Image (cartoon, rainbow, N blue to C red; front, side):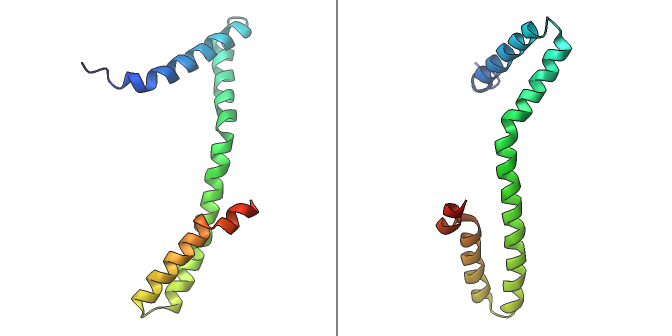
Amino acid sequence: MNDGGFLYIGPLYDLVFNILVVLYRLSGENLGIALIALALLSRIVMIPFTRKQLKNVDKNKEFQAKYQEIKKKYKNKKKGIHENIENQYFYTFFSILKIRKN
């Protein structure tokens, strides 16, 4: 039996539908206002994820700048490039010291 993946999305669908019904009733049974309120609510819920994504974009820009510096410094040494890029990548994205600062 193929359920089309509904088992995975079903609980999310139920949650969103129930929130929409509550908003519909709170808005005086105006579906337009309920939909706008649902859209605003979903945007508010997504704010922490958006902020995290923007921080990662900034980290990636920082890494790209350092990557170009390393590439220029070790122009003819492949091993030196790879080792330094690995270290810089780890420091930029996974360093415990940087995590503790935030």
